[in-house]
Length: 177
Image 1 (cartoon, one colour):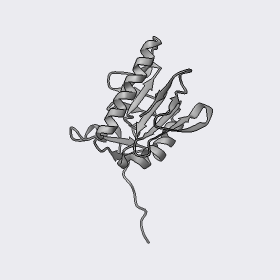
Image 2: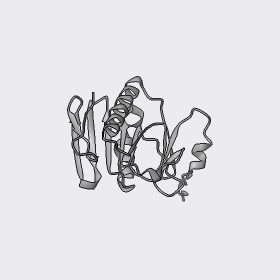
Image 3: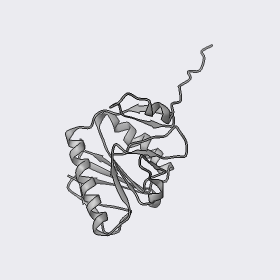
Image 4: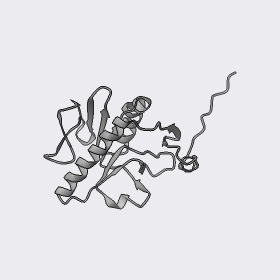
């Protein structure tokens, strides 16, 4: 009789014990190592961060826009730790110097080939169940943006070059190129 294979459950302590420079995320106790981002990935991330920060500043908003690497503890447990490419957090009580405790209002992930299934499936489910309000998947290879507005049960797809409306802000849209 074959014994059931037991997978080890990792915790946030295991993430913090990784060697310097090694990045990983932890979802339901499973470690996902992260590849270094490409130039295209960084260019898109920087531009989105800049556009969002400028919009928030222009409205005298209080939401914070943070770029990776910045830790997000989605749940009140020690088996979930993610570093979204961009997090917009409107409840400043969730923030301390090191981490966001709880779901950001808006998360943007920029897909790398190595993270595609995690961004489109694993994180999609995790962010939805953690009460993230809006989740964007920016896919440079396919030149598209998938927008999930979880509060309204809306899923939309946009091509690069189109204006993408931001669900958490009325009247704000971003052209991803």
